[in-house]
Image (tube, rainbow, N blue to C red; front, side, top):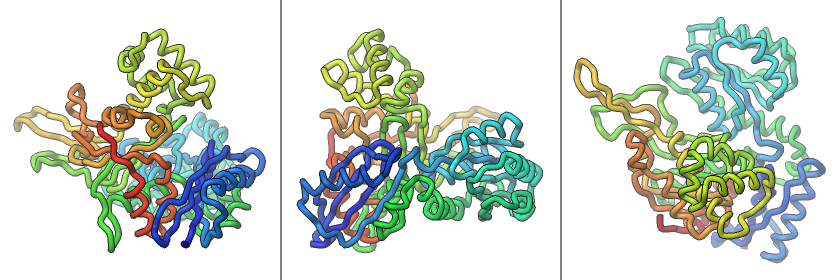
Length: 460
């Protein structure tokens, strides 16, 4: 046996997973409250005590960790045009595992400056202009950031002709210069920025989040938890040199505060007559719905889906559902405790999935012009994706996971949405996806074998 420990310092729970990479197999999992306000090692110690009661004492050959503790990697970004460089900055940040609190467009205003000062992010991503294009916006925004002050690092990834001027303006601040996220109109170049964000996270943010002691105990690179999940999704889809993956997939993680959606697919049009509009979509895409969550953002589900529709799905009156929503919102650690609250929780989770998948997937429009009918696709085409991975407490702790997940499929009421038409639903019952993403950097075949074995198929 060659046991390895995988740790996920979450905002609420610290989760530990033990695996044997010799066989390979899952040995056990456990979790405890994350004690980020005191000493994060206390929560880890409690989780390890619980794990030992399941697995017995283990002599781990390696320890790897990821973290979203203390709110995760909080980022702000500014760009030139909302639909172009600002959107590119957001795509790059989300793909690096960050939580993008806000994206600004055009020149920062006094109100923007006050808001940035109040937020005090972990990282600010400053972009704007194609190479050789507009430089006024990014240099103006650099001056505003200089005046704001603060100790957070600034990553410059805009017009390369303005990069060194921005660096001079920001003299005295921690500045990292990267390649432009959009060097040419309509061309994305996000990998260099993502690599830099992860390096800043490792070298600086780990210290700021109180994870210094934890980092001394691990052998591997600590990364944001969403980055680990993305690595797991890529591994599961593509496989390794010695083992096939399962192909294109979509994954959803319904949490208490946010709902994250991941897709691994090219997402190109099916019909060759279809033209693409907007920025190209990344092969591995992550979106975060900050207003959709099962407790902290529960009212966002009602706002997006409508009280009457959710109540009908739950088989409750709108008045009773509203009472339950208020109760969950005020008691964020409350679990469903009777038939009514279970039905409410499942209906809310169903519409969280529907709203999040609708926002993540692209759209197809029929446009009539002088040349006749034209098909225009914006975003990512997921119609033919046939594997749907689900995780999150409300989806894995229920007997109706498949039915809830089916709300993410194609909906006849919204024929323009390019969501999957039908999928095999695979459930992360053991909550190991992030752990396997960590393991994949060192033992990819073992991680893939365990993923395939532990993801449980459900009927939709």
